[in-house]
Image 1 (tube, rainbow, N blue to C red):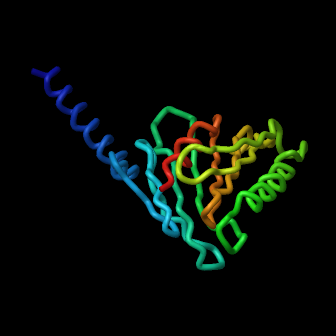
Image 2: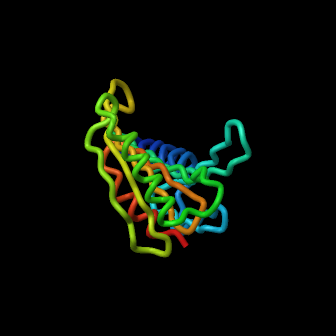
Image 3: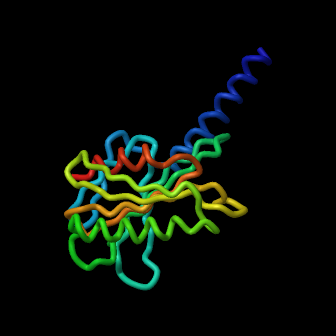
Length: 175
């Protein structure tokens, strides 16, 4: 009888922990978010964050991978205005990609600088990224900046591991 009581207590604790985790990571099976007329399909396992703008009333859509205990992998993305003031053209996005690639080629702060294009999906995107040096939480973090052609938006991806797959999945879902 005593062993059964112990299992009931363990089950209750697990339900409370799972409920708390689910409450802090409100994952939905089919979730969409919208920014400036562009719909983003939120992948399963990701959570939409409200990111208040600091100085201006510039809307930002934040996504983060849900926290899973005992894993060290984190990932987030912020989608906001690219700063060009109008929809990105292929030419303006290419210039921005080259400028961003030059930022990521600074050997004192970054390594593994790369550029690539994501052409599948409704909106092509031009991306540049690198791996950050340094100590602390962002040491070895992957950074990727993508300019979304046909929209006034850009996306900045950050992760403790390779971020390219998540970036392609999210950028391909734009509609």
